[in-house]
Every structure is written in C-alpha cells, then in structure tokens.
Image 1 (tube, rainbow, N blue to C red):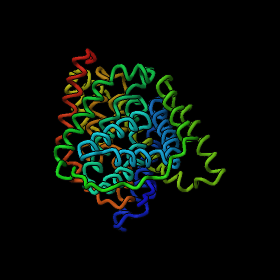
Image 2: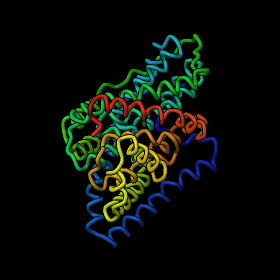
Image 3: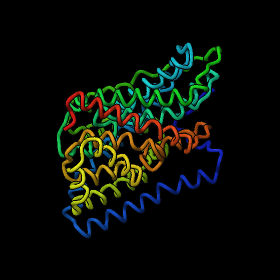
Length: 394
C-alpha cells in the first residue's frame, strides 16, 4: 500500500470537503478587508505590524517548498517505513514517531510536519496492524509541542522575537530544555490515553522505494544551516525553496497546481491579513501590553494560550507582541502549546485535518481536543518549570 502524502483528494465526506475548501477563501477575504482597513485607519501602525509579521510567513513558505521537494524524493516515506520495520512493539513505534515529529518540526516547521508526516504515520501504523490514533493525533499535538526549539519551528517565534534578533543557535540555547519538556509530556499524555491502540501485529513490512538523496536532502540541510546561523533567514530560505521547486517544475517532476495546494496560499494570505490587523490594534490599544507587563510567567503563558484559541496563535502573537513583551519565552510557551486545545488555535490543525482525510483517516476534532485538554496544562506547566530552573523566566 503506497500513500501519497500530499494527495488530498480522498476525503470520504464531500460536504466536509466543500466546507474546508471554502474556509481558506473566507479567511483570505477577512484578512484582506482587515488589513486594508488597518492601513486606511492608521497607516503607520499597520505598516509597523506588517513589518513585524511578513518574515514568518515568507519563511514558512520557503520551508513548505523545501518540504515538498523532500517529500517527492521519498525522504519522509522512507523514514516512516524504517520506523515501522525497526519497531519491536507499540511503545518503540510511538517513541520513534515522537522523535521523527520533533526533529521535522524543529527543522522544517510544524506546518511542514503535519502536512507531510500525517499521511506517512497513518500508513506506518496500518503497515504494522496497530491502531492509527496514537500516531494520527500524536502528529498534531507533538508538532505544536515541538515548535519551541528553533525560531523557524513556528511562525509565532519570529513574530514575538521581532523586537530581538536571535540566531537559531541562540534561540535554541534558551528554549531547548523547555521545548524538550513540552514534547516529552505531550507524548506521555497521548501515549497514555491512546495506549490501547499501541499494539502491533507481528507482520512484515514491505520495504519502500529507496529515497533519492539529492536535491531534497540538500535543500533541507541548507535550510537548517540558514535557520540556525542567520538572525533573519526568511528570504534566504525562501530563495532555496523557490530554486529547488523551480528545478522540479522545469523537469516535470512537480506540478504548479500541487505546489499551490501544498502552500495553501489563501490560508497564509488570510492569516497574514488578520495578524496585521490585530498587530495594528495592539499598537494603538495599550491594554494588551499593559496587561502582560503586570503578569508573571504563569499568567503570561495562560493569557497567550487562551488568546491563541480565541483568534489563532499567529494573530494572537501579533497582538500580544505589538510591543516588546516582559516575558517573551513564557509568551511563546502559551502561544505554541495552547493551540493543542482547539482547531481555532493554529494553522497546523487545518493542514493536519486535510492531510489526514487525504490519507483516508477519519480524524475526530473532539478526540484531538480531549487529548489537548490534558496535554496543554501539563506541558505548559512543565515547560515553564524548566524555564524557571534554567533562569530564563525573564
């Protein structure tokens, strides 16, 4: 059985598919109206918000292009197949999947992780005869939880740190331990609550085609170097993505329609417009920054988590970080982990839902949120505790 990780046309529910196709365009329209209105009301503040927000969206575009080329080279499929073949039991399979999700998220962004790994992990679970739920829901929750390691792991990291120029290495030195704590705790929650399906059948796994160790791997490695070493890697990573996908288009190994589908341009445009709108509000309205200045790290993370669910974590980051926040790392913990509560929390939910349906799975939003209700408070508390122990609570 071979699954195409970006084949998103196998949704068994036509009505649900139609609604999911309308949502990006509704968001694009809402974002466009909000952005235009902000520029008309206060051009200076709106321009300032756009200046802070454009870089993350450019970076994720580049990383998605790199991820698409890596996927076409079979790198993700090969990793999933090797994981299935080496796993002696369900616990080993889940631990390996956790590591794969964490590394992919850290290096290529959580949106790339859910878009390409979700179908691969569904296939991995099926190939071993076990239940797909631990890997299916784990891919979503662990991608959000694993997005604290590098600036490019989550767009919110770049928005919040727009006031500070950190290289990837500097950011990693501050956040690796809280990020690791969040990832481990989230994995423990998913593994515990879904343990009944972590039972593998002793059946052989057919080897997948050998991956192509060429353009995709080179693009991934180059992107990692740029993200780690550069304080502002967005344009450089975008250039890498554009170059490699252009090569694939010219050689006929990819199609423009497929590229546009993977990028989800209406979603990105809509979220950017909404982020600029709320960033403008945050600059003109002093309440958000005043509130955060009176909160400790626990209160900051709590407000960030709730706000991310109410308006999505990207616009929430733009609103809450319109001015330099008092506790930026705690703010990021809330913005990155809080979205595991609900589909409204992050773009990753929509990409995960689309990819899961494309793989023939039947994801339950309630089941994912139920896991999040346990995982979010525990992972936030663990990450903040580690933050305090490291002396990074400022």
